[in-house]
Length: 255
Image 1 (tube, helix red, strand yellow):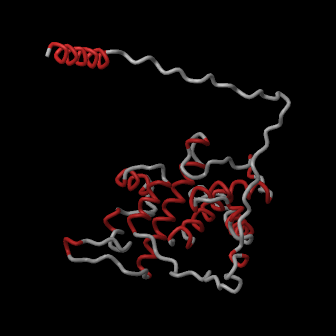
Image 2 (cartoon, rainbow, N blue to C red):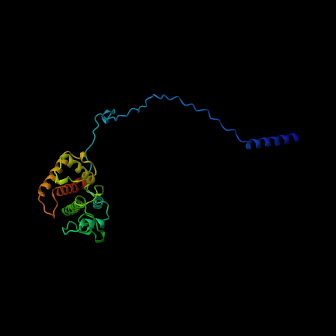
Image 3 (tube, rainbow, N blue to C red):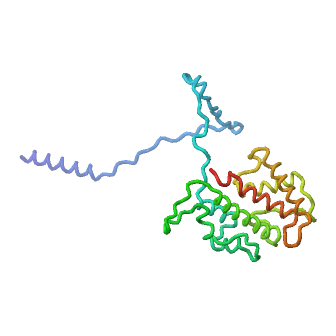
């Protein structure tokens, strides 16, 4: 009996000691670093060239449909109003209205309330739905706002003393003394407006775009060569015409 009891106590003691003992830390094998050749040249992995569909087995005569699925759609009026606000420096609608009205009596712009229904914005208070498509009144309203935007920008940027980087649209200088622009000088300045209004470089546009706007600019310069003090001079009228042409462009209104 004693022997059995002693063996049980001894087994319990061994078990307790085994549970409380701390295991020996594991030793990791040493990490060996392969030698580095200082003169070795690191090369990029070969690039994966795309495989045309016609080279995939079973697709030799597969027709690809590249036709547009939808015609160009008109931007919502709210988006175009936001674009006008952004082009004029991110002013609030009320501040932009004050700027577009100006201090003269030329009546370039009235109030936003006079144009909202013409632009197609719905007015559910009087049960006027959103205009589903363009109409002559809508195009005339957009044209009126675009003309006011460009002409006020000419007065602010080209006639004022605002620094080039602080200007709204025309972030470039006119040649001193009214000198005529070369094709390269016009192209560089036109690219500034093209990027600002249409959002991408003029070099990516159709090849005929720069020559056509160059002709538009030159025609306005010629017609305003002898303008009076109340009107724009030749270069100012030329850039106002270019700006108005860009804000009338389908790429500005459609997507």
